[in-house]
Length: 298
Image (cartoon, rainbow, N blue to C red; front, side, top):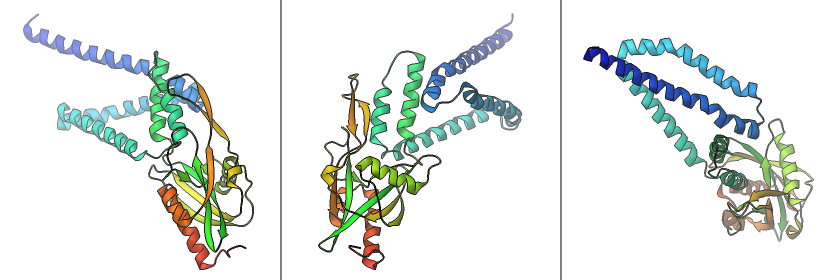
């Protein structure tokens, strides 16, 4: 075997070894990601196979295009295009992570502690899926809630709630919200708003409701709200609960109320306490009251 032929065999062997290693990664992707998809999203194995089949079809269909590009602009330039494409995807992921700062803290803790490093492919798959949920949950989601208001001494007051759990325990400014929750896939937003208000306060909303429009959180969540006049004793609210592992990595599950306290506040007090993205609701309500669309004390 002459040196030139030997060099060709070395190159061919290197290529096939590389392909073997890549294919090994592809084969092992199933055991890593299949259990989390079945566990978290309730997918069937048939449904999980659909994206893989679609990917294989797309790869096969793109083969002639890649070959044409190699003929036109050489293989090295095609590889460069692939590298640039991967870098753009990484940039998109980073931007998605940086924008997902205001997400549901309950899910954040739930998935963060569930996603600790564990042994086995299935555990690693759970960690990856949980981290994905951590960065994406709440993005492009829809929530709906209600603003209970009252007029005391000719001053508008609104009911705000403080989120429960260890993440918010020592926070005050920016840790108050209107009672709200996520809208189900096929659920009416107004129905969801009333349901969530009752679940988080134990109070059944009633009376005439006025639409306050919607706001968008920094994390991408869209929140729609309605206002209604009412009164209650904020110290007697009764909220539903959620369960997380606490302290972290302790193995102990603890239940916390979704709302640990509520308070009627003035507009100026709300400006300092409420999460900034939701103050627009209070501002709109005040303008409606000033314009007389809602008669005070009616």
